[in-house]
Image 1: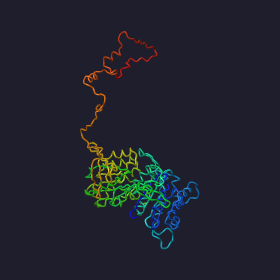
Image 2: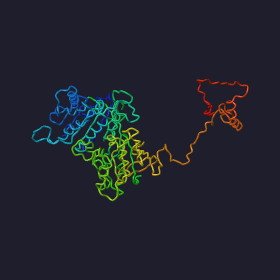
Image 3: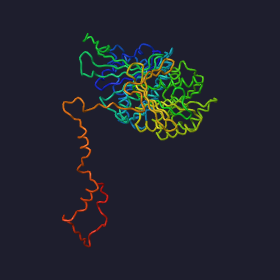
Image 4: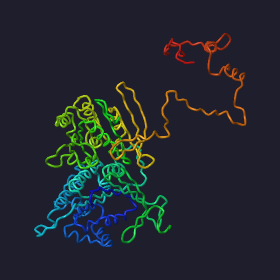
Length: 264
Length: 292
């Protein structure tokens, strides 16, 4: 990956299992990229199980220091059931007081991705040189339901983009959820639609994943609309492509509309 | 408009999530640079590399980028430019940093970022002051119209001398631009064009979209005659028409009829009214204000 991208996945809620696609999107595992994963809605073991099915061992990556996993659910316990304070839990401070903002969470991300040279283990000889970092966030919409405002989340994603993509030439993938068919007439709703629009303005590539408008189908699980926003060298300015996909046990296959193997 | 805005001009490019106005903004920057003007870009949403990447073929010696992208909220110890520095004094200081004979053009990318953190009235005030101050020849701002309330968008655009709203076009590369220009005399002109931007950032206006034809001063609409092609006759002959015009409608009163009704003649019932001590007798005619 020579150019850094900020990719946003937006999902309809009942296609959650597509997070498994995120795993297949990271060839970073094999090349020396450091991955910072903010898992706010699922436990580490969930992703590990998915990863194992795709042939990637997250446990190994974590031990090597290649993967830093922020387990939001576990960290939030230390806030909700206040026990002895943990320095790591500072990142989840916004749970205590949403108005504080996501600066601490950003600091956590910054520290993680910035310590890219010298490997993950302290005092290791022949320290490994990590390549450009990758930041994965699953997902941003949950922050809204925790009381964080849309503006704050957009500031957070801005800072992450400035550090990860611009400064360190890395990549970012963020997941958001769009709730069904909300019509935003005035554009002044503080909800997920506004967050979605704000993130679309910021990112280079949007993948909008949703079910088929006609309903459930056994062979075609849904469609993906790929939207390139920023210029790719001298290429077209905005490009949209629509694909359909089917999720298999070990990944997903994409095909052009109407060319599903069930149809042809 | 790409030829150059007047002094004191304020252009807003409005875009949405479906189509980014940044490409058009780059065209304006490119045009200004080619006219040997100096351009200052206040970049909140765009990094320097990204801006320069979009202006590959432009003469960028006169382009000055002010980095508000890296730390706009002051989260680090040494922010270069934060959003709270968006005020007349700070902006003039930024622009005057580089000495150049011609006053510069200030490009703001984007106004939406600023509006998210500074109240709209304060932003409008600063923009208005900037227009009048004179250190800056023209201001071009990018605004994401779908990220704000309509009132906010309206207020900010009200300050502008021109507003271009861009939206995706029907086919491929082309996009639609709705242009509103406010001249010094107060006249407002509106136009709609289909355009596309070439690789060298020149804008090609293709044509006007089909549904709005070119505006004519004597625009006559073609009325379809509803009385044509019927199996029964809805038309009036001349005698019928004159009889219709002469007809007195029941509730439209002529003066004679009014007086006859309001002042009852002899023989009809009369009302004799003798107020007693408790009555509030008003001499005025209560029917005086009837518009009959």
